[in-house]
Length: 105
Image (cartoon, rainbow, N blue to C red):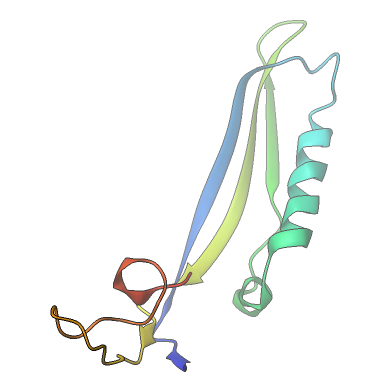
């Protein structure tokens, strides 16, 4: 069953911890974990779109805690189209299997 890409969207996801104990646990650990997650779960589209690596922004609040934000550039298919399939149901046409609307992304 074929798909045709009509477009894509890019956006930035932000992970934020308001009371990160930066003296006990270096905020770079969060950055590293996000990089590992991206390495395990990113697809070819991420590379094709040329998305940047995440960015980390620790802002100390006091001697023990910080606000830590990790911004992750993300992207995905927007409005991709699946061919319709006919189904023998009382309701008539249905879209291909997947999430509502036939989208699997």
